[in-house]
Length: 622
Image 1 (cartoon, rainbow, N blue to C red):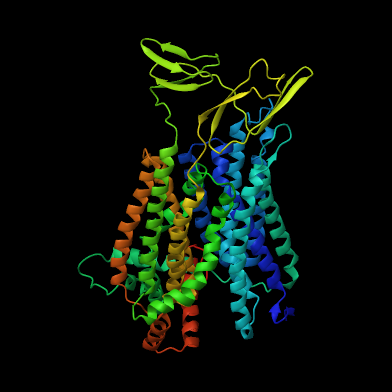
Image 2: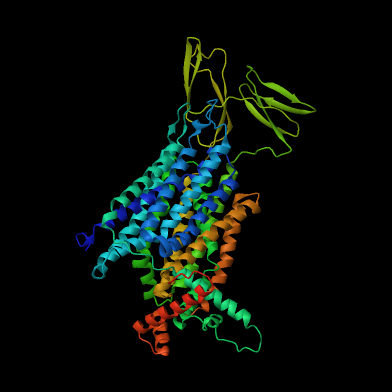
């Protein structure tokens, strides 16, 4: 008998707190990850984007491994414990990799050994991916195991609170960690505080693990029951192998290629696999949606760094979880019922198609914003050019001649940039925020407010101390960012609307179309579509090399529109089914009651086990 509080098992409170802390840890780390690649490791945009999406793809592939370990070997509880330890070690490793002072021997604020920081961060990310992905399919199911049959109402409430904690952790972390990163910290030199931005998520992951372990004595712990995915794979493999053996025209054709497994596997299992395969076939076009969706954490974040808006930058980072919490109830309670009352057949597959189109529109919006940003960017010299900076500190206008016959007329304290095919050098002093000038006992302070993205040259005359730094002249080499971050709000709204219509509806549709014991198979397939989508981004970022970012946005939008057309055609020919009705029909054809069906399945498994043992192969039971 489990201890209860207000009708709920006390153990679930540990699980809910654990989930909140873990999601805070994951999304907090991910919120600043691409910025760490770009501005700490000094990778270019394409490499930062590629590594980011490779990490996300791995996070969505490892749940399959976690499910197999939990169901076939360790059970959910031990799997969560062991992989959470791996997860926490990964977060701590990642936080350590961001401490620039570790290799900053000359104390100039820049690491002297980037290889050390890269190796440490890659190790941390691999451990994090194994941890977060491995526990993903276990935690919610483990929470469900804590409830008894008479607590169905409390169970539904638990899942609502559980997913609320996911969004709350995501919202708070994406709000807090960018602020932590903006702080300055360091032992020898003050730099943007990546150790704090990654350290807080690491601490939250350790807290998550401690909280989960604290409830150990109260949990209902079930033994591993065998992995259904392994059984499905074996059945499909046998059907393919058997069909290949009987490929001759002398053998009669069968209604479905899975029917070639009839010689060995139960008809009910085959019927269930057929239902799952119909849904998995519809999954084929889906990765393209995730290709666009997950770029809000990479390309769109990098786009925001070229825009202006101090406080708005914090709002932009949290707009997705805020919109999710707002749009889900609005869609479920208002929009979809209203469409149904209008007599329109807005089926789940149609909603998913519309969700894809919303995501495509989001990238068209991002392309338009990028075009506006490009108008404000400075003109940099090409690989065959160099840039000369000429500053006139003389009291009158000077005529400067650059051989062979190029002339520049420069006003006093004016600056002019000249791009040439010849090679020249540029000497300038760069300062940020406040700085002090000290010479012996003489000193003065100079303070200016600089815009993001700007570059300045400061001219310091010999009279600087006599007039308290007032004679310092500043020259603006590059103008600050002028396109406001608020222009990103429409693209975030469109992509989140697409997510609600695509992702939430897709999961509901998948679960309604699959047998109860095959939900985990579909969950694995759904997560794989996300992983493949991130791999597509990785490939395009590394191989596409489009000259303009807005062109890449339009390319992705066009690809998703094409895929949505293909998906709509596939959806048109799909026939909705009732899995329970089909299962009942199969049982009826076999003349079996559910109890007899279970007995026969066990007998067939034992027979199969004996055959495998004869061949020296270990059999894993369902």
